[in-house]
Length: 90
Image 1 (cartoon, rainbow, N blue to C red):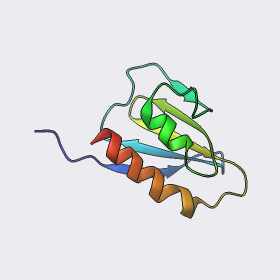
Image 2 (image 1 turned 180 degrees about the horizontal axis):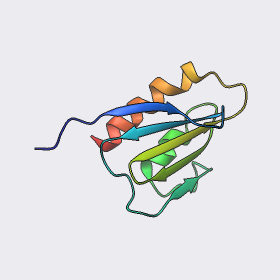
Image 3 (image 1 turned 90 degrees about the horizontal axis):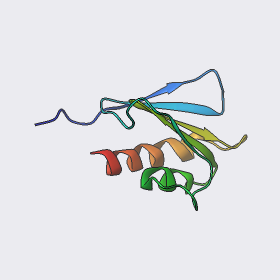
């Protein structure tokens, strides 16, 4: 049985981006960047981009970086993003 999913939120050098580090792989060695929910082929990326104020998501290995539009409150983004990550990955 797999360990329970852990999601740790970490700052990045970009004040408009946060890194969600998982204890699971989301990609294998190839990064994926999404900026448009309508054309995102990955359901999790589509759902994350559906959060008001999210402008880009980046997947690589065991983390997802969520970038907000400037001025968007992280308190409105982080709980929803973490919930979606848990729904899709767990």
